[in-house]
Amino acid sequence: MNKTGKIIVLVLLSLACFAAAAGVLDKSIGFLGMQRVGDANDAYLQEAFDRSLAGFLVLSAIKSGLAVIEGSEVGIGFNLEIGDIVQSVYDYVDIAWKTALAGGTVILITRLSLEAVATIDHWVLMLMLLVMVVYLTLEWFFTAYARLANVFREAMLFLLVMTLTLYYILPLGITAASFVSGKITGPLIQSSQEGFETVNQEFSPSYISSQLFADDADGDGSIFSALDFTAKYEMTRDRIRQIGKYFKDKTTLMATLTIQLVAGYLFDCIIFPLTFFVVLYVLTKSMVTFLIRSVNYPQTLHKQSGGA
Image (cartoon, rainbow, N blue to C red; front, side, top):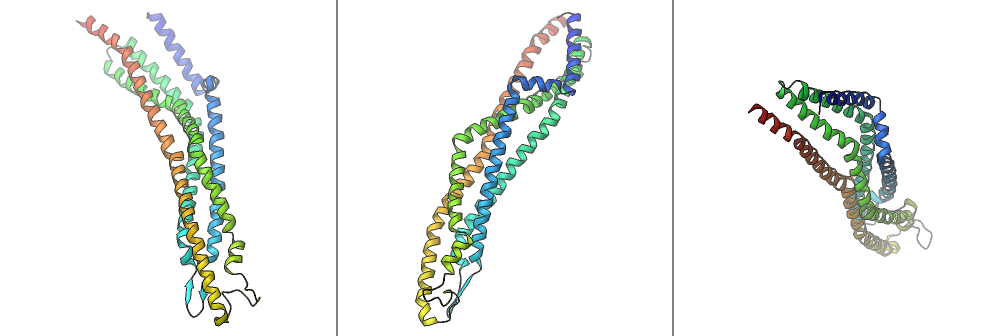
């Protein structure tokens, strides 16, 4: 390239710096399809957050229902903490509740991170173009400053990878994760939440009260407050046995739903996005490094032959 062509390239890159700082290049990148990708990611994250919030509220309601009997006590010549019966079920609900809370938090953090990226990406692009202008100026017109040019070349490489990360790798990584989520983890989480909604109806305070504190057939009061020990002892023991069997059966269901929910959110919020991001980042960095070295390699040979 002759001197005039080099000057034209530097002028165009300088103008591109101002265009990037003004956000003009952002609109151009959006026209290339990234705006549609961004809108799809926003819709996916909003839907995932709403789903997580709905599951969190359902689990909170289940915890409230279990809390009704958590400290209940039966006294008929002895004391029995009803909470001991439901403790295993409560533990699983608590784990699922924390998982839904953590999953919703991660999704919200991801949304906020994308919004933060949208506010700084054009500045990173501007800085990358500026460093490129300085590097090419040193490379073309100040060949005596080869070491300084190498420093700016490495800085340009770093900023180029960062720019591609902010504009392409992060959005495409989330898009890929959302696609896999819709095929694998999304139905799994949805199934778990539907199961918890069914359990929520059975663990509601009104249902539990009707089951545990129901009046006896004679209408003399609940079985837990009756004073007629001889008439109520067998009825109370049978009711406690039924309650224990009921919650024992629910323990297996709650364990299954909790494990599904934990696995779904673990893959949906961490493993899938992180995996796609790392893969895209490594591929992009390797490709950029290869291209830059391929461009510089003929120039290096030319300098070496000229010096010889």
